[in-house]
Image (cartoon, rainbow, N blue to C red):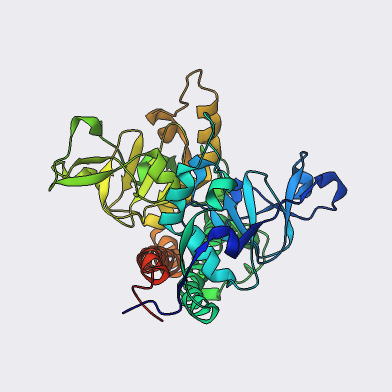
Length: 409
């Protein structure tokens, strides 16, 4: 199928770089976007600050502008601005020209082909930056605006679903709030001890909670409950020194290291042999906890991989996954504080810190009732995260095909 009506155009015929800088002190706390607020590879915004958070001059942008991270270590940080604001000068503000569809331009800039071309233009030593003079001369075949719009709508529909999943994953906050209320703050027990009905609980659930406290290593805990070390909840398996397990062409796994943990993604990971013990093979839904460097705890959704040293894979035959995950997350600030105090280049915690971190374990009846409430939320978060990754892969597969006209709308 030919590409009738497609015209070869330079990038600067389709887009313009907006170079409007402003002193944040002149603004009244308008939204601010830095590189840290743009997710790498995911094409989404993960937060924002305000102009009051920064002191140096920043670039002004308008809703609908394309924000493109131009530092090479942070390439493929690309989003469409959802509001007016200011951004880091390490981010290009790009605006589509009248004859160019905004979404089409966005997916062109987010394509791996465009990122690779931008990378070749980068200059500098410690933090190389893409050069507009080079990028503006990039050429490609561009369809008529109606077909541009159709391409943008197809890819945009996938991103809309990904964003919907991301918003719905915020139910994790609801699940965590229930966990904290029941098992950390003991709100139902405090209410009953005061002779009140626990707020928001059905009588049959409230009846499961005790109405008094007793002393423990955790402090005052509900009577009849248990306080023990975090290691009581499951097995904390440390990973392997994976450099000892070189891959071959037909037998390899991505190495799951701290870098992969932070992004929950195994793209560009080192390859290692698949011939390792099953216990060290990571699967979607596993709890992974890094005990050195950047201390993090995630529910892994980055696909099958090999567990590297400095990471724990946490499993249990006795306690629910959500219960373990939330208790680790509860102690993360304390663990990070311990690691920060280490006089080494890579702060860490030791196993005795896990043992010393106290948790509270309720009666079986209460844990079972909590499980019926929290686990569906928890499982939904995992399944939606996996669906989003599949949609991202589909979007990235379709993008070059649509942009090149190999698939026509």
